Length: 450
Ligand code: NDP
Image (cartoon, rainbow, N blue to C red; front, side):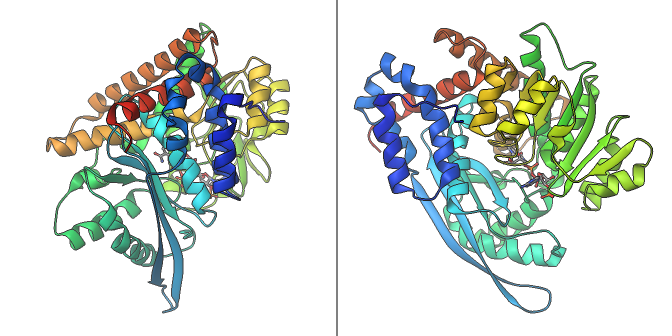
């Protein structure tokens, strides 16, 4: 089952994407999802078609692929592949994270970069879209190996970056430690303390308070706002979260603060379910400090906590926050969740729900918040980090968090208003795609054929 029907006026553009990017199924999926919303827009604004805005948007401004050689702890030379896809810079410098995971291919980076354009536009901030990464697997690697890899990666990438050009951040497998090594190497090669060239930095060296928390918190602010549309909130609700990385941990923290109870979370080995609610201190210790598998949580917690090898979506809950990775929640899982009483889904990860799953949720009247709106708090706070760097300032946690909260409220409002304007009330997928697209498309027209 596919949720997406592309208007005949856009079929040619989509077919060209398939023809020119063979085998890049995640990229095709991301393009299909956006184009699926744009039929009514190009009917109302035919000049977008005449100016070939959509074809232009589907082609990245620049794609960089490079070799990353490094030496492991036993002296063996290792070779990885590095990517940076600089997608669109009409709204500002390319902005988007770096992912280090063995599954990373060019098509992965293109799907993420394409999504990033519209997400960044939705924030209302002056940032373009880009994404990067490598097929390097940080799991099981020593700190010294991670450092050597990051240094080699940056030795090529630095020439393409700059605070006014391209500003990467973290993503899967890239957290504060990796950003530190990357920033150190950039500084060393360029002999410039250019703090605004990377975001997600440590607080002592140019980072922003609340950036670590921002994607998870932002997703929960958005979900709470969605619940508010039906006069409800997360207070008192059971919640399941997938993943136990950066986004998941801070989503769990905010849900708990707002009075919800997180029953389960996961990693790629399985999930833990804890009827008493996930103990955040223990989870952070297992995952952030010790970098262990999720089973360690259940082993140490005991009581009503247990580890299960399977999909976290088997745990019944009113609210679901997929915060791990793309296509982790499929149609079968969605059908079971609807039967089990799930009423709200907000995507913390990028494209975690398959098109079939999205369709199941929408047809069942489940409130569904797509990633490009729901998880935009991370990149928005990265833009706040850039603001602080540009003014040589650092803001308090409370101030930054309040700005994040306000940005999420605004994104929510933009999605709701745009969906209503086109007669699709409650359709956050449509609202997010159209509001994001329109801002980028209008800027492209204003800047001419470039
Ligand atoms: P992390 O690397 O911190 O955590 C990723 C989590 O997802 C880990 O628990 C990991 O488990 C799990 N995971 C990864 N791959 C799989 C898989 N194939 N099956 C099951 N679980 C998996 O990454 P982040 O939390 O930063 O990112 C999570 C998602 O959020 C990604 O989609 C990312 O693009 C998106 N995102 C992140 C932002 C940020 O600011 N960090 C901003 C916006 C979006 P394991 O350790 O076993 O691999």
